[in-house]
Image 1 (tube, rainbow, N blue to C red):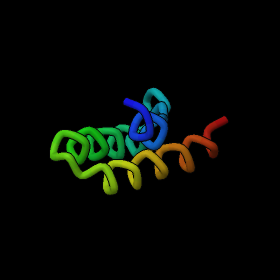
Image 2: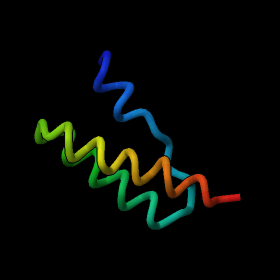
Image 3: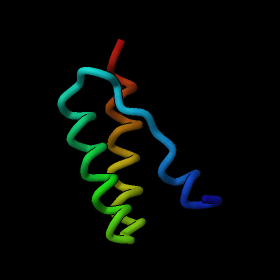
Image 4: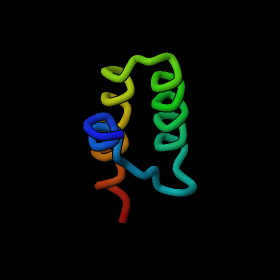
Length: 53
């Protein structure tokens, strides 16, 4: 919610194993309350999905 929602805003590319792994890691970190680590995974997803065409 709020700032955290903005930090974690991303969408994994369907069928991509790298995106799926980062998404699982993001959700695990978020569940543990480690928003900093979750944000790093979200950034990885955003950066990686830019390579999908």
